[in-house]
Image 1 (cartoon, rainbow, N blue to C red):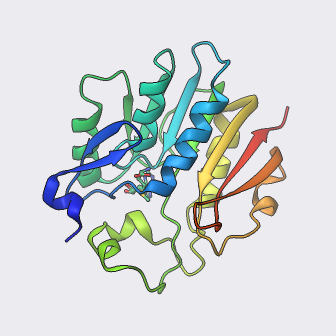
Image 2 (image 1 turned 180 degrees about the vertical axis):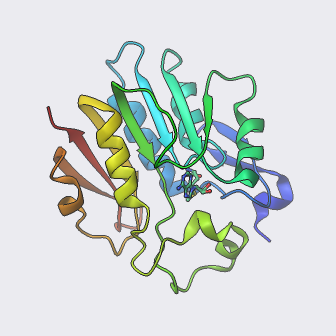
Length: 206
Ligand SMILES: C[S@@+](CC[C@H](N)C(=O)[O-])C[C@H]1O[C@@H](n2cnc3c(N)ncnc32)[C@H](O)[C@@H]1O
């Protein structure tokens, strides 16, 4: 059993998120993506931010806490995860959007889309604590790319020109530029603390 299930909380940047069975335990590598997102909003006045595949709300709540003028939406499909998401956003301005990232209603003219979707290739040998995460939060088909193209398409649809996308992925996904090039430019790969490719960022073309 993961320690976070025993304590009922998981640290994420300066936050303590309520978590338990049914929701993905936020990981330290995702803090790097959160920091990147908070950084790119440094000069934005009242930005609109969407966290696709929000789970416990880690990315959405980190942005809302560091950028209090932002309007932040957290999109999640799983009924079980949504129970934890509602708990965590309670008393914050983060707006929960329940449903599938492919067809929920979202604002347009968005400044930033962040996402840590399921991305582990099926059959990958994972650490024992990963088995306590809901499988639909972790695995995404044979190559781990079942959902990432939908994240990219949805981001392309809602971002304003010049808006930014940052999403986490498996370290076997070394070059995802071909999925992004149609709608995005300035595509950059970022490594995690173990120097493995961990998240990719891009800017929506005009
Ligand atoms: C890896 S977890 C990430 C949770 C959170 N962003 C974090 O970093 O801790 C992926 C989340 O995506 C959700 N999810 C999977 N497919 C989805 C879909 N099509 N639409 C909305 N959410 C989805 C899962 O239920 C899970 O909560």
